[in-house]
Structure formats: C-alpha cells, structure tokens
Length: 357
Image (cartoon, rainbow, N blue to C red; front, top):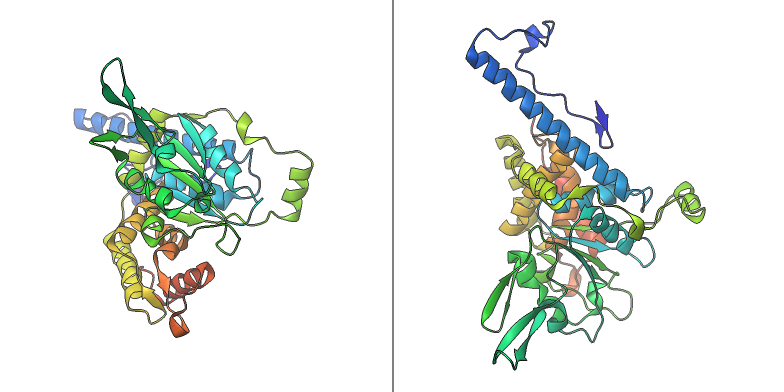
C-alpha cells in the first residue's frame, strides 16, 4: 500500500520470516490465538487509519502551497510533536500561506495575529476589565486563546510583546494579574519571520527561539511550480476545507509520542548533541530541552512516514530544523555566525558522527 508519504510500512505480521509462505488467513486453534489475531488486525487497522489521515492532511495543504513537500511535511511534524514552528524566509515565498494552509486543514479555532511595532502584550493575551455591575475585574481573552495561532511577522514587534508568548508556548497557559488561564488543546504557534538583515525587524532572543521545536525555510519555487502558480493551478489557503478534527489531531500526537526509538539511535542523538557542546566552532551548544525537542521531532517524522519506529533518517532529516536555531556560532573578534553557519555546523557534525547499524 502506498500513500502520499511514499510506500507505507508493511503491516506487522505474527508470522516469522520462515513462515512467510504460509497463508495469512487461518483458523485460530485456541482462544489466545484468536485474541492475538484480533489484536494484530486492530493494530494494522489503526496504522492504516493514521497513514490515511496524515496523507489527507498533506494532500490538502499541498493544494495551497505547491512544490514544497519538505516544508509542508516539517510543519506537520511540528504539529504531531506538540511543538511550535518558526517559518523563516524572504517575503513573498509563501510563509503565511503555509501556516494558514495547516490551520484551515484542521477543524479548529484559528487566529491570526499581525505583529507590529506598536502591538502590546495585552493585545495578544487579553486584558482584565472592571465590571461595574459585578464590582470586580473580569478577564477577556485575547486572540492567543485558540488552537492554531498564526503569529505573522513575529520579529516586527518589540521584545516586550515577543516575551509575552514565552509562557504560552512552553506551558500552554498564560498568567495575567492574579490568575492563570489554560489555553485550549491542542495549541500550536506557527510564526513567520523575515530574515534579520531586512529593515524594521527585532531579532528574537535565544530564549524565544528555543521555544520553537523547528525552524524551517521555504525557498523559491521551481520553474514549473511557479508557472503553475501563475496559471492559477493552486487553491487559496482560505478556501481549504478541514480534513481532520481536533480529536484526530490529539490521537495523532499520542501516536507520535509512542513511536519506538532503539537504544542505538538514542546514543547516536546524544553523540550529536554532545558534539555541539564541545565543537570549537560552536560557542553555545544544544541544551537538554533542545535534545528532547529533536527526539520528539524524529518520532513525529517517523509517524509521518508511516512507521511506528524511528530510523536514522528520521533523526538526520530533522536535525537541522530542530537544532540549528539552538546553537550559537563563535567567530573571530566575538562575531557570531548567522543561520547558514549554524546549519553548516550541524551538517558537519552529522557527517562526522557514526550512524548506528
């Protein structure tokens, strides 16, 4: 069976390799055999349902953003791993479209926040207003209280407002005045950002960047894809219909957390993380939180590929999106490298680290 993610993983069979020639359907001899057969059938059915839902989500998003499967899939990975995604690229390549396509593909509460220099924290989180009839302050929720948040051009607002997102992104709650208010589940922030060399931007602090599970780019389309866009072959993201529900997203997130990771792969990931802390090119290595984020991203990537277990490729393909924005590159005279230097450093470490057999 194939899906939009490529060949689907073969269903787990109770037969050993030497019994591969035996018929797959047989009459159980005992009650325990019947229970085992039913368990395998249920497991295979659940795996098929997961692949179908993920394939539908991917296909629906690609109606709006064409030729960027890797960026679309990584955005899905961030959602499955219960993380937040920073989409960073030059203006006009589809950052907002990608974020909106994901939000519109889910039957959920969606809010877009346009970040500007004059935006205040209360404009994002909400504000307490005195109710004269009840004689007390009542909290009025801001646009942050939704399932999917599109934080458009997040680096065009001041650090004060950027920091208002810290607690929300890390703990899915906000604290205002004397109260703490939980955010709905699932909760995911899809933020877009223009590169820092463009005028009118405020660089995100390291503590803010670390809250994003992944940082991804989109890039310019190929000639054929851009021709299709000019011909109007794509569908506006605002016209997309939901293909998954909130409950299904929560189920997919639980399935991603249950993806198996072998001890050898875990040692491989730890070796890469440790190397970022000892490399002479890196002045600030990956933190334990960053290592955990990479682990979750690899699990989600495996699920997106239709597997219930991780392989080395899951870690390698998520390494740069999950780790590059968490390190600092030290240069001569205290100068810091940019995004390209950080990604190159992670790539070099991956090449030097032996892959487990």
